[in-house]
Image (tube, rainbow, N blue to C red; front, side, top):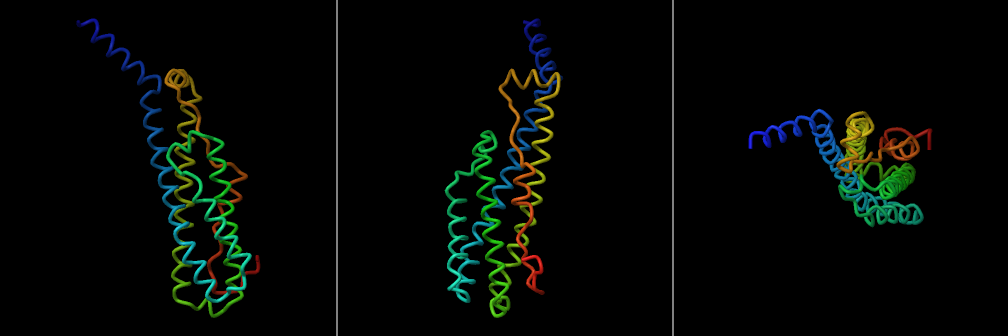
Length: 200
């Protein structure tokens, strides 16, 4: 009986020394960080219909841009954004791609808004602009936390001897944001309408 308990104790200590606990902790950190990324992207998607409606009130003839934003939001909504997404590299890439399309569509909508001084002066629009700016900042923070969590986890999965434990329990590296999709989505749309934008 005592021998069995000693064996269990040795196995527990051995697993801990081989990175098992670190893998579990890092995996939980990724789950939490990804949940916050999804939460902030959802917040942005929720702002879009109101933004489109306000712009439409002043610039209804800008149909192509308005339709582009609406379609981009529909694509975002069509993806089942779950915590498991981080375990499927192809689904992850697709999610990031549609978020990049959403960022571009919002940027085009805000460029249109630049042409309408009365729209920029609208109180509802200015409130939405502030909310969007805050949300884009939170997306950046959440995304950076996710990147750090994945980096820590992937180092553990690839490093010896924890890589042996990772293989034993089926832990694999998780996808993160790449240079390409960082360029597509890391720059929040310009929402400061105080002066004409030279870059657009």
